[in-house]
Amino acid sequence: MQTHQRLQRRLGVFDATAIGLGSMLGAGVFVVFSPATALAGRLMIVSVLIAGAIAYCNAVASAQLAAKYPASGGTYVYGRKQLGEWPGFIAGWGFVTGKTASCAAMALTFGYYVAPDYATPVAVAAVAVLTAVNLMGITRTALLTRVLLGIVLATLVFVAVAGVMGPHPGPGVSAESPGSGWGILPAAGLMFFAFAGYARIATLGEEVKNPTRTIPRAILAALAAAFVIYLGLAVLLLWHLSPRRLAGSVSPLLDVVAFSSLSAGSPLVQAGAAAACLGALLALITGVGRTALAMARERDLPAPLARVGGRHTVPVVAELSVAAAVVALLITTDVLTVVGFSSFGVLIYYSVTNAAAFTLTERPASAPRWMNAAGFAGCLLLAATLPFASVAGMAAVLAAGIAGRFLVLRFRKRQPRP
Image (cartoon, rainbow, N blue to C red; front, side, top):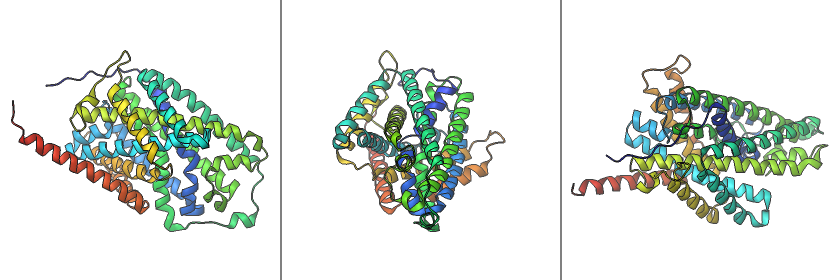
């Protein structure tokens, strides 16, 4: 039986929480409110509440499972252990493909904020630098995440102050509202893109100290902080910009400052957005690499991806492979097209999480089975109501992965045993 070198447990509650919150306060917080408002108008706040409620169900399920299976890979591992190989593969494949696309989106958003005329080269450079940081070990990743998270939180505080100070739109402008009630669920699906970062904590399960205690606390703390921030920003943006202006903005938080008495601070918001993109990209590359590592250990991805090496005991081949895939996407992908793809893939991922948690026999009183059932149904509902192109595109990618695994398994069965 083949053995694999294990990763080292170096992360405490604070570091794990910072990685999860840094993932959630990424590029999504700077762009996702506009398309959500275009779909739901003033009811975008309801979409935030729905996305947050489903995210809470998912977080509870993730915490239950991560405490029982503290290994790299997240729901890929949970699905295999609780439901079987195929559900685990679907979760892992959805996470790896969806989040690889998200990496490209984060990198391109960073490039557009820093140097719009050279966005792609700058994005490629960012991926290269952050991959190098990851290869230096998980403690370096956590340290840089804390620094970037501090910059982002300071930026959001500045935006909030600018929004409160005003000036604010008049009653006539405020009355205009795009979207409708029919857009609440699609908008919630897009908002879920911004909430999904706490999965990064579970995928790092093999590198967390005292995982049974640390992982649940870090997941719920990161989600609670992100929910309060998103809900506050949603109220502030609708009040300060008006729904019509918010729906048409490509940089809503920057517009809050630009249309306020603190407009001279706009460069600070640009810097904060850049830091958010880097923080989210750093955590994404880390999480995707660990899931690819776990899938390779089970031979659902090429075996070399399971190699752990170097002085800092990191999954070198998986990290470099993820970086190569992201760079390839940067050449061919538009930043706005992948948000829906990522949301669909991650919602499928969390539907498996909830299904796996539902089968657990031992559970705390704070995690009843009905919550797992609600999370499962909510994930599938939001996935189905996303824009058609997102659903069709990621469904095709998932189908290709399933077909590929089926053919590989048939080929292995036909090979003569040594």
